[in-house]
Amino acid sequence: MLDNLPKVRGRYTENAALGAKGWFRCGGTADVLFKPADMDDLQHFLQNCPKDLPIHIFGALSNSIVRDGGLRGVTIRFGREFADIKVEGDRVTAGALALDANVASIAAKKGIGGLEFLSGIPGSIGGALRMNAGCYGTEIKDVLVECQAIDGKGVLHILKPNQMGMTYRHVDVPQDYIFLNATFEGMQETPDVVQTRIAEIKQKREQAQPIREKTGGSTFANPSVETLIQAGLSEDMKVWQLIDQVGGRGLKIGGAQMSEKHCNFMINTGTSTAADLEALGEEIRSRVLDRFGITLRWEIKRIGDK
Image (cartoon, rainbow, N blue to C red; front, side, top):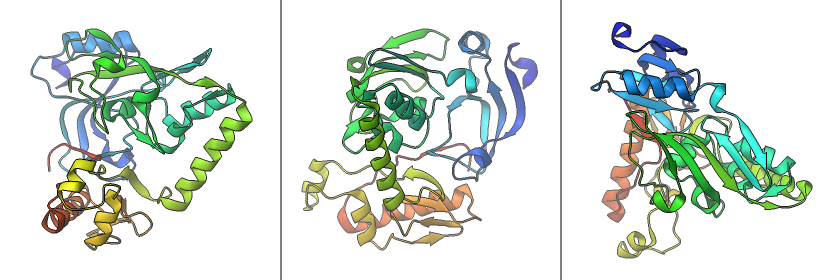
């Protein structure tokens, strides 16, 4: 395959371990992994690669299952060149690979409040943009000023929140768009006050979530209020409660388990395959559908060949 790919300044790696580097620590390989040297190198690749080439993009691999059969084509994974974080006034601009928690931390040190919720989101800014990530009452759409993305033809786009169709854990942006960076706006506050709020978020996560396990964050999105009402349930019911009521807490398939601590988190107990994880998730979805008539929506991305 390498003979058919454009010459780049970055690096190609064939049969690259991918799933094993994700937060679940299991799954398949990538036919070719491409780490671009910078944005120009990525643009050159996209403009000159074969038109029928399957292309995938990953950041921190925090909320992804790479299926055991691996990924065909080229998988793009950013390096530290895409992890810069810059502060100007009450705005923070972060590269797609910048970890959400690092953005919150740097903002706090500069006395910028309003971004501390990012400290509770596993993964990187690119992934947070793709799913309008959020927690503790704030979402990406609430603080986003604009972001840059490059499409499958190598064309650069500058996007405002009102162009992105941002709703709960969803953005209406073409799948071939690759997010490069984002600018967020907070508010001037005392650094100590902001850092205290981050510490409180970290403490809440430590107490409620299995963050020290091989996990990928929340498995399923909370159903909408309309969906809950149609099912005859309380409008403030959370997805973990549905999972709990169908016997999901601690449920195991192979080496995969729904966490005892927070049953909307899947964990790799040490021997799980990607197939185990996906089968466990589908078993939970089946039980909730049978019991409540609700089809749970995956937050964890599943990609590749089974």
